[in-house]
Image (cartoon, rainbow, N blue to C red; front, side, top):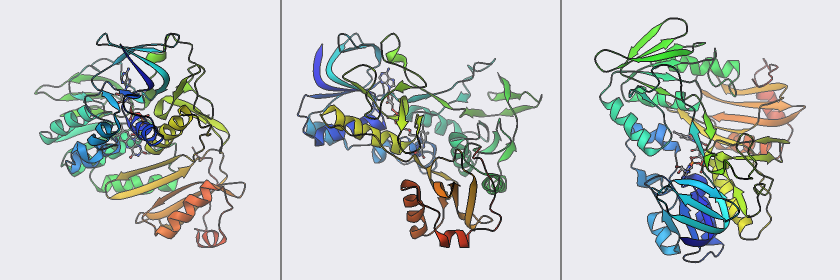
Length: 410
Ligand SMILES: Cc1cc2nc3c(=O)[nH]c(=O)nc-3n(C[C@H](O)[C@H](O)[C@H](O)COP(=O)(O)OP(=O)(O)OC[C@H]3O[C@@H](n4cnc5c(N)ncnc54)[C@H](O)[C@@H]3O)c2cc1C
């Protein structure tokens, strides 16, 4: 059994930044342990669906902290150490390898895990999910010897991976439950641009379709059977159908769970001495006035930092505008805010050629913005307008397309 002042459960983005912040705030050698089931040090996941596949960028380029950071600070990393049980009364984590780690303060940063198909054939070796480096490695190896693939899901994973696989020379069919891409974010006009882009790049779109079952195909591939009756025979399939918070370790504890670990604005759970951050934390959003569970890199980083500060005695509220970035083919874009309840949408720029910004307005105030291929000045203004919930700037209104539309955000 080992005892630490601070234990971080999990070894991803939030954990890596939390470790860094604890060290910066004076936690000494031997006071912090990071416990992760993964075999590698905390790394950023965002290259896994992009540069890791298409450019073979090695893992050490996207580690959150350089390996010597842990040696220099005396932070202990327990890798390949799956936590099987949390005992909040005894302030202890039991590991699958029968070891026990006790703590004075605990940060839960166990992230999220992919939702999986449960239909017939879902155990096929040719059906992949993408969450960690091992998944990405397996998909890359499979793609390198494949000609065809089905991607299931029209969200981030489906679209990023379709683009990457296309770039690797794989012929992709994208199966989407909805009749458009990223329906939680993209407006009709944005959807039109991206649909056209994917089709021009050779992706076959199967919109408004669901998968009914999978079957191993003769010759080693997989058959993806759609509800419509159509069967798609391909070399492999990848499902990106959403994630769920990784809350297994808090089951049976008094820690309150409701779509993730329920935390207050200081990222404290319902049990004193235990904080949660990142994809696993369901947190009050003080800017938009509702609860949310972020599933993005910056949310994980900023919450990891904020929680560590509070663990070391500060009392800092978590306050952050949702932010995410992505890239589909060579089109890199960013988004700030929340489109819910918006009553007006402005477009600036060229929607035909993919250099535009979208501004979501609610009662005159900018609530969200999407920026792709625009000058830095416009990007900065969009970010500041959302962060400070300013009125839409007059010149943006003047330059905006005249076909301002009413859009509820879904
Ligand atoms: C392929 C991919 C691409 C992405 N691209 C983008 C992007 O372009 N932009 C963006 O903003 N966001 C992106 N994201 C999302 C972003 O990476 C996540 O929001 C972020 O990683 C969440 O950080 P986290 O620390 O909360 O969880 P994670 O990074 O998932 O870390 C959780 C850690 O906890 C460990 N763990 C879980 N349970 C246990 C247990 N019982 N015992 C021990 N360890 C455990 C896990 O193994 C993992 O190491 C992407 C995610 C993926 C998977």
